[in-house]
Amino acid sequence: MVAMCFFTTLIVTINIVAKSDSNLLPPGFDVSTLTPEQVHDREYGSKLVLVVEQSQIMTTWCEKLCLLFLYQRLVTVGSKERLAIKVLFYYVGISFVVMEVLYFGV
Figure (tube, rainbow, N blue to C red):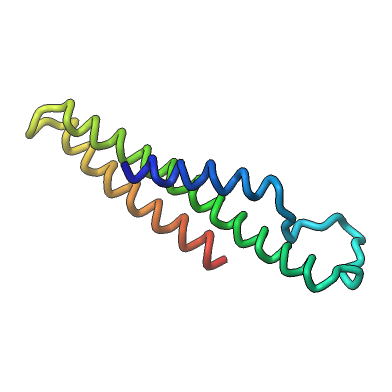
């Protein structure tokens, strides 16, 4: 359900971003020619690009978790596969946190 919410957010915002400006300017573009309204529109578009990127990331990671839950339900309790899935849960969780820290921190 959470993955569907992120996917819906992704689809809605990507359509809005397709019609708005962002801070991606061609090389050699004279920024001083922009009006305050254009600057505001580009700031808004840039913020929406961040929402699109995060929605895409969250959709992908939620799908990974859904598959892990599915695999967990398929294997029997106490088997080696169950332990492998548990280790994979931790690996996915840690790599998600590392990826988000590197995305926002670097």
